[in-house]
Length: 172
Image (cartoon, rainbow, N blue to C red; front, side):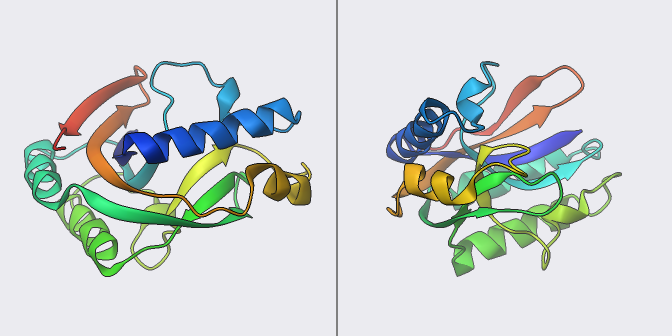
């Protein structure tokens, strides 16, 4: 699997990592426990089996032109599926348009994950995976009611086959 992800500005990254830490300190599931070097707050725009020929270069050009992109976080929620605890991203027109353009670039890719498809995608930053039966009310209280702001400043692709990260855009 290959992803297209947006990385957070330092202030937004710090806010999300602090929430991870508070969840872990409260004994709740948290991404703070994932110590792999690739683990960082990010917004996934797409996930595919592999990039078609030329897609990485087209994505890099698209992302270089779009970034940085301001972002504001919304409420804390638990999503369906594997039940991750997430901080919802308030999508503006620019983010929605960028997401659609990424999907256009990946139109010929195999194995496009329908959870990320335009019209179905729920933009979010993950706080914990498989949150399912954990205490949602406590999690919301621990994370807090603030709605951090910042921007998406870079883009990367994660390759699940070898757990490597590939820079798509490092525009600042």
